[in-house]
Image (cartoon, each protein chain N blue to C red):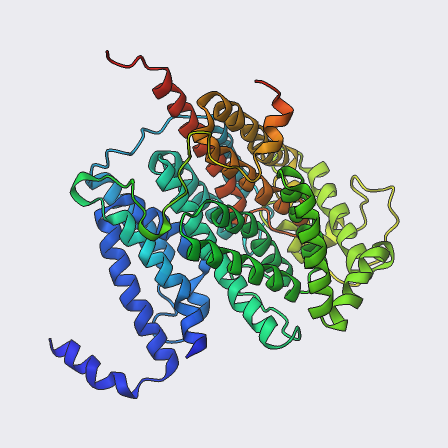
Length: 61
Length: 453
């Protein structure tokens, strides 16, 4: 049972993703990804985990 | 109706394997329906199915189902039939140009290959199929949502193997040794696939809005790390270190990163069996290791073939042909300065993406291949330039570019000791970087456009 659950785990998530993308339907808008929603940037910009180093190197560019 | 009632009668008598096939069949039919309506859905399934290698886990009536080909066909047909307003017209860019050049040169290589190469056309076919998928990427993957969805599809496809093996590794208290699926090759190839997906999982962990989803991706990441350990691949360990160091030193929390790395190393050492530690210790004595020195002999043969045929090489997988190997085994190629033992084997794999392409496609193919990889790193800089110009709201694109680069670092480091030049994931990464650059460049144009008063 556990093995079956683990095996179908990526299938379930993939289906969820596809359904979310298909939701646009007639208007073909796919701005929403349902459960896979991404973090949105705030006024100061999105907190970045790994982009900071480039900014430091780039100075005030 | 008759079919359904027959199915309902048969179902209770089905064993686990048949049930698995049945569930996958339902998934397949639903997926086909969804892809037929929207080309981008089919495209994601195409990429996902190639990485998860569903057929390797099927043992019943779905074993021979050509999932990837069906999804590819549906994508192409629905792209022609349905009008997707988010589709961008195909425009030639450096990455696409290099990829097309690689395909054209590959055709010349395949046509002029040594006779009798068993996998010559099969591998060329793989290159063409991968290139077709990649060339469609800037056409279909045009928004942040679509880029994010593609990253999820890649992560779910490739990490499925990692999650399974990681759980087995935990359940067996470190005794499990990961067995790869036939599509990838051996344990070293599986390690490479898993290493390349780690940065994608990390990106999804950082970028997902929902807390449970973040934890899920983190869990998948940790299980995939354990799965890399369970492959007992020495190249995998080196690649794991390279990816971890790359992510740590690209990030802003360097001290925390080093702490996490040390904790992970202690955990791995505590969990890994003695067979793993003794195998990893042999990395220090590679120059005396028969397996490693066998690779150096293969590199000599590969470079000797390239010197003999600088424009077209010997053909795809020429090295693994006994006749070709025996013809060049006495040559030192470009590595005459390294003393190697006499091998009592023939037709040895190149064990390096660089020497594999060099032997298969000569210097011309080698330079195109190097240009493709180098271009990905160059494009990352272009993405960051655009991100800085577009403002903080586009920072996710820079983060994604960094993670794609981390996957490429894994490929370059681990691939240097593996025959994996025609594996699809690095090409997908290279084109994903280009798709990101194109997206950012469109964003820049939108921001420059004067707003109506």
